[in-house]
Image (cartoon, rainbow, N blue to C red; front, side):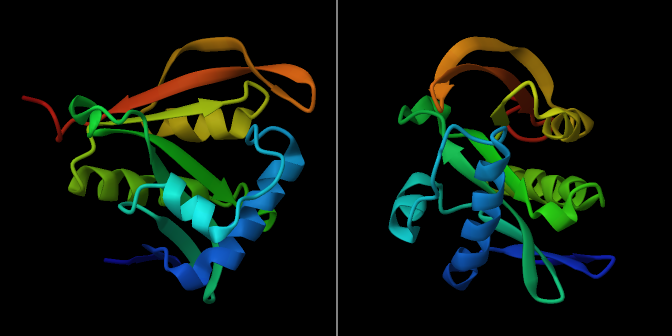
Length: 170
């Protein structure tokens, strides 16, 4: 199912989108505030890492301008409805409301696929991403202090979580 909002099309990611998705991921890496990764994976590694459900893209004039996907939080069956969210926008798309639309689409798709909890770990310096998540109903669970090093520097991560109001409410 795809959704069109103001000439921005929200759609499921296909393998042919990978080069554009990877380019956007590289832009995120370059900021130094989006991920602990210092290089983008190849398709095979990315494909193994991310869940097959909820791999989404935002397109404008046929070009991928943002993407979102889910990672498993645990291999335990009890946590099958909990996932970690990755969401990235191209530099040209930031501040235009596209992240809000992509996040809403991801939440809708995640709930349709049985996910009751979404979580994100965000560097505190990435204020825009924190605001995006909070506007979508995520709450701060806490700060994981000095959780990892990026380029030799210890970094904190703000842990945010969103609980579905329609899935897993029994």
